[in-house]
Length: 274
Image (cartoon, rainbow, N blue to C red; front, side, top):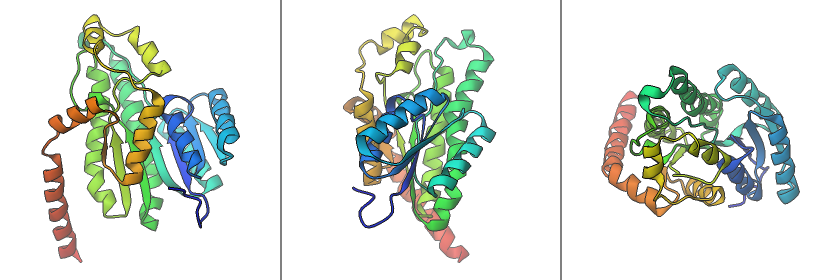
């Protein structure tokens, strides 16, 4: 897909776009001809990321430094980038954080921070771009959840709760958004070779490290390719590798049947309202 063929380049916004999965998603979208706006906390990292993308692809790329856990700052940043580059066609919410630890050892703030960044950072970004997408009847939203949103894992009571919230939000929004012409996807990567994973490992409980010892570690490039490929195909649940695919299908085997039933009921109700 080349978004620039026969039309003006479309605008893609990536939160957490300066590093890891978010940066690699932005790199692929730049190669597809999108104009890009990257959001992350550190301006110096964003400058480096934008310069790299511009050198590689020549794609128009800008940024806003903000904390996605701050709803006012995030809303203002998204307003500025859409004023500069036009309405958002593709949103990818890759900003996230993880604080592992045993439930009774984690401070209350660890639960609050992860919910604010992982869930509310996703929610507020979607809320900011959704009205314009709905008005034009087109758009794509890709949310980065986690394999920890498919099954609870020792040491992740706070992190998994925030990612399960992203999953529930995406599953509930999917049908509503589809009726407005908006495609929603949610990705479930496992451990990915990023600076965040390296920092997290130092704080995992011993049992968590033992559980993760046999798991494969994906590259951010591989996860990003799976995310963009899934979004290009209109796939709702994106599993970046065979392990997460197996986990996703066994944990949620009945969801496609239920989704179809819910969609039929929603269509009947909407038709009755007309």
